Structures are given as structure tokens and as C-alpha cells.
Length: 384
Image (cartoon, rainbow, N blue to C red; front, side, top):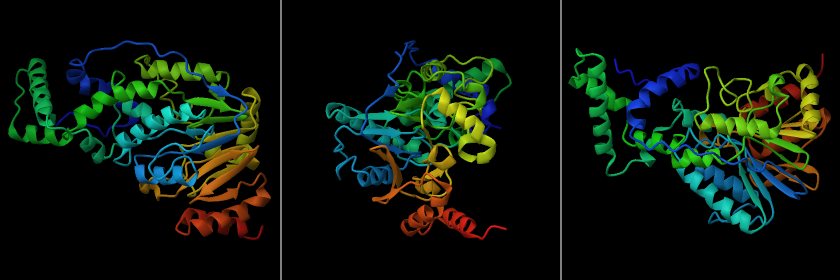
């Protein structure tokens, strides 16, 4: 059986991936560079648009940006001094990650010239790709990296791997069946993808230039959430630690970028019972001196979901076709919060009493959102 398994559990990914790519990555030049601490707090921003998880769907992402008046039909910045926040999970599930990254790089430059800003936050899937946990990579991602040299690159790596195996086990025989299984586990373009996403690669370096957590005005933005055990860390400490880990600084125990309670993974604020989680949320708001937390990572109803009377906004609407292709973004403007759903601006409620009317309005725009219909039915049911 070929040992190049890409489907192992995440908790085993570091050790297996380290062995998996050892032969290939030693051919790359090891670049050890420090990333300077990035700015992570901004005040007096009049307009903020935030977009949740993209997961490799360029077309839907572009539609969301156009619907929020961020870009024109050619994908160029038209938003002036607006701050655009993308909450991470650009890769996986869909085939267009490289195309999305090129768009984001372009918009970063264009926004800066206009006095605006593009904040591309680090999500758990960015970290997974850098660490080599490729369980959710769409085959189209590898195809996007395929060139006329891909077969030669893979053949060279095959010879290298066979030699390494024979050195470890003189009785090893690379027969036809082994070669066939080996090639199935490493499609053309995968090695180039791995190079670009590694800590030393162009995409890996670009990811590490960004933050995992930022604060704009009195709103905290991050991919997953803040858990009780990380509450004592400042925004800067979290960002610096995660960048350090993505640059090869992981220890024996799961790091801040890996653990289920870390900022890239924690789901408590998005999914735990509100009354149970409320005391913790109040500590988060006080600790970071904010009024609101905006999260991705947890797809649910096909739209932006307000929790805790709007103190938490979960904005992973399921933009990618993989999750239903629901086109929503968050608009924060003049101290008010809105959902932009398929180009329509809908005020977000700040009370439980307003939830039903809000969800009913969204359902008119997203009639195929079955989970949303179920939530509406639940809210409309008479109390016992």
C-alpha cells in the first residue's frame, strides 16, 4: 500500500506530512525570514464590508464583491476608503484558489491607492495547506498548477522516493502496481501546489504577511473565535504566534494555529447555547474593548446569522457552490450593521424579537436555503 496518504486525521497530519514531503522539500531552498508584526487595529473607518469563507469559488466571490460595491464588473476596486475584510478559508472545496488570491493581491494594491484597505485574515484552511494537510484540496487546485514540466518534476520525485525507500528497506521493490498507486496519490500539479503553499513558497509567504485577528473601530474580526483559554492573549500576541507557527515554529504540542480552541478553529461563540456562552462572550468584549465580534468558519443558514442580540455575527453564509452558493456579505456603516444578500441591503436585528422578520426577508432572497426555512419555522412556532 502506498504510504502517501492525504486522508489521515488532522491530528496526525504534521508527522505524516513531514515524512511525506521530506524528499521533495529538501530540494527547495530553505528561506528563514522573519515577518514583521503587521498593523492590526484601525479606528475611524466609516465603511467596512466583510466576506466569509470563499472555499475556492471565484465567480461567487466576485459576485459578492460586486453586490457590495467593492469592485466593478472587471474586478477593479471602486470602494474608495472602504475596508474590506475577508475572514479566511480562501482555499479548499473549490478549484479557483489561485485565481482568488491573484484578485485579492490586486485589490490590496488598488485599495491602498484609494485610501481603503483589504484585510485577508488567516483561516484554518490556510494553515492546513501550509502544514501540508491536503484532505480538502479540490483536484482543480492541482490542475491549476500543472505545467509542461509537471510530469518531469513528478518523475524525478518518484525516482528520489524509490531510492529513499530502498535505502530504508533493501528488499523494497517498486513494481508496476506501486507506481500506478503512487501516481494516483500525487496528481500532476500537486508538487508545484505544495511548493507554493509551503512556508517557503510564494503563497505561503503571502499568507504569513497577514493577520488572524484584527480590530476595526469597536468590532473584532477573526475566523473561528476566542476561547476561554486564549482570552489572556492580546491581538498582537495571537497574530505573532500564529505567524511564527506558520513559519515553522510549531512545537510538539498543537499550536495556537492548530488546536480546536484556537482562534482559527473555536466554534463556541458561533454554535454553543447562547445562555451558556454569554458570560464568556462578555469577557471577550471587555478584554478586547469591542462591542461586536464577527466570525467565519461555521456555515449555517445561507446568510449572516446574528447571535447574542447582534454582539456576535457569524458571516460564513456558504458562499462557495460546495455549500450552496449563498451570496451574502456584511456591511458596517455609520454604526449600523446590514446584510447585503444578493445585492439587497437588509438591516441586521439587534434583538431576538427582530430575528423572525429578518430571516423571513432573507428567505425571500434565498428561497433554496432549507436550513433557513427550518429556522423560520422554529421561530414562528408558538411557545409551549
